[in-house]
Image (tube, rainbow, N blue to C red; front, side, top):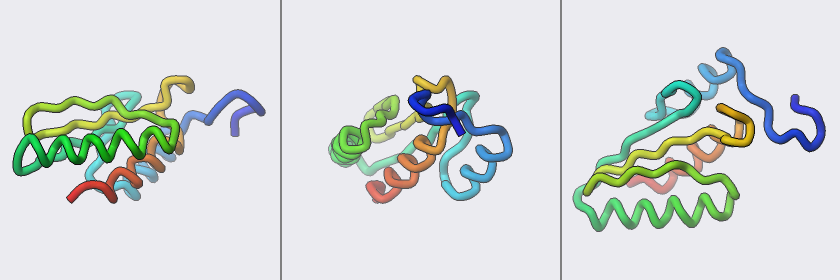
Length: 100
């Protein structure tokens, strides 16, 4: 647990592995987790990205987003904590609800 006011606590390797097991499709990439989604076309990809943006704003936690025509890659980490926290996995699972 992090001290009061210090922000979310970084997860250790075992906790990250356990969270990844509960978050299918996502993989660890150094101090981040990421997932690539593929869509039928650019329009479908952009509908998804707009949903991601709306959810991220509500949650106050924003992924890095890379768009390549009909492919969208999301990358999550808690920058203020310097790595992965429970917030990243919570958001990743909520983002899954947006994917077709």
